[in-house]
Image (cartoon, rainbow, N blue to C red):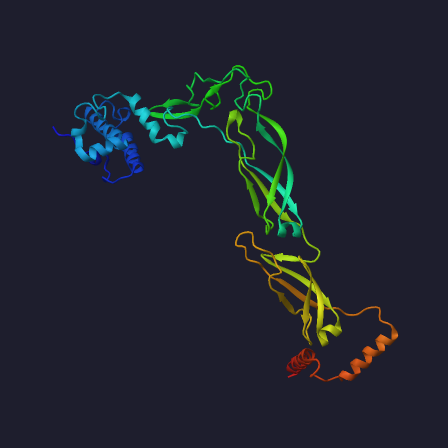
Length: 378
């Protein structure tokens, strides 16, 4: 009697992925497993077919041979190991492979993974000038570092950790619940897979010790609040020689008394006199590179913006340089003497009360006010 096609047994296409094959197997295995079928010989035979098909199609070499030669590739005992049904024990091992990611392991055959050390964060406050130009800064970070006397192993010099006899180095043990095989962390070695019978005196078997270390950090030019610099492997050392985590230097920029930053642009307010605003002139404004001259045209109004290209911040990502935007603010003179007051009054008288030519904004405003009240009385 010819054997059924393995792909048809699992109900998958011939180009099905391994994940699809495992999903199909899980569904059918739960349906036909002997623990559920109460000794039904026909369904037990069906389960054997499903198990056999799964073992062949999840092995890349066997699957390639099967695709090329069919069942003939395994007729001389070289293939699926389908000579007999091993009961729930065989099923449990494969079931562990299918559900390995859910229950934390792969049937107890995988080696335990070392727990990587924790990532750390260091908050670094910079002035605007430091953030724009970049700088190198020394920081002190309290953390766990690898123990030097035992080289991170946790065992005293001259001795070595021993393989855990409970989990045989896997770090996990298998618990059976019916036909489910559930993985749990080994209670003897706490998942490390090793037992330290003679611990190091410096770290007491942890493989790491607490220490404050000094690091030199290069802050690139152009960083802003919220940016961070990653130092790989400078975080907390893992226990028992596991890799260290990373250190993230979180940047925050202090407020500046003159400039406000928005992206790559800088903004500042520059006070100007009434005379400069009316007649025009040249004023001196601050930039991060020093003083610069800004030409003010005549009849400039308060709040007018002037752009100085290339006087902003160089982007840390693109390298583009922003601008400096100066907002001129008309400053009213104070502490006037009698002669100054008289001159200003003379100037005001020369303007005339209703001369809209010299004060177009004021004229427009008062015309609008007059119209508003006229409309109310209609």
